[in-house]
Amino acid sequence: MMNTMTTLTTVAIAVPLEAELVERIRAVDPSVTVLYEPELLPPERFPADHSGDPDFKRTPAQEEQYWAMLNKAQVLYGLPNESPAGLARIALENPRLQWVQAMAAGAGGALKASGLDQETLLKFKVTTSAGVHALPLAEFAALGILNGFKRSAELAQDQAAKVWPELRTPTRLVSGSTLVVTGLGEIGLETARIARALGMTVSGTKRNVEPIEGIEQVAGNNGLPGLLATADAVVNTLPGTPYTEKLFNREVFAAMKPGTVFVNVGRGTVVDEDALLEALDNGQVSYACLDVFAVEPLPRDSPLWNHPKVMVSPHTSALSAAENRLIADRFCSNLRTFLNGGDLPHLVDPVHFY
Image 1 (cartoon, one colour):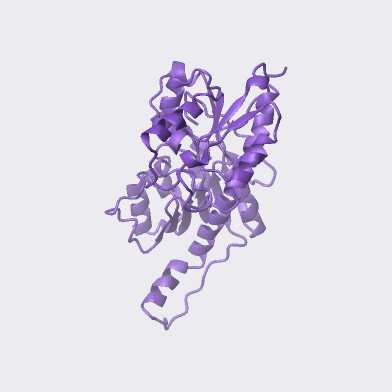
Image 2 (cartoon, helix red, strand yellow):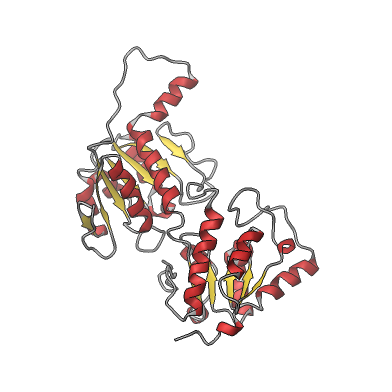
């Protein structure tokens, strides 16, 4: 059944986007009106800079114009001002709002932080860009695994100190080793694909436990300690939810075999950072490659900054020069589904924020 609003569908571009990609959205269907006022949007500082230059300020007249534009739309491309507060305001002000396409792969945190009540949250849908970031995140995870196995942190320290060790220390082979991926969704499966190409055997966790081709074992979170007992490396791709809060605690790190390499490209709240530091110090974890943290930006006094066995990445591993194009392509596909009255993919659950 066709969406009865098809002939009236207005899309507003709420975040910075290249003009050629706006035209691609316009070309989806002649029934769609796309509102795009680039002078009201902060300039990008780098590709896929969805928040734009923080020094950008609208005049009072421009601010009024920006919100007036958004309030005309049934569909938003991006959260207003790329913020939970912006989402809250438009949800309360715009009675036409039906759907918001988020730029992030995990928009549940922003939806929760908006503070909107359940009745309001159920009035519109939010879709994420999950999957768009799968390849760059999986490549970063592979980097973390290789760094850990090939002792890159120690090499960098020796190079900085101009030390040529008398004893040559062997590195570990990735091929033939075992990887556990927590969260076998799109990011986790892409990570598994790359890991298998490197010769690794892959097991992992999934909320709905079911066999997956190419995955040795699949378990729920309660089966994670059993998988970790034989793992040489662990990659977390899980989102931050009440069900994943500090999943990696002291007991879970203790279940790992000594020397495990740990990579986190999911959300920082999934990891008890104090427990991770203990595991690093006692050798249970030999190396940690972290793109996400419980508090971001990572506080300057966090011991993770200076730990010799930790790589700190400022939540940038999902970024790529192709991101805007990939998200716009995803939105165009979603928009066609919306116009046809179909079920939108990658919906955020407004109850569990997942």
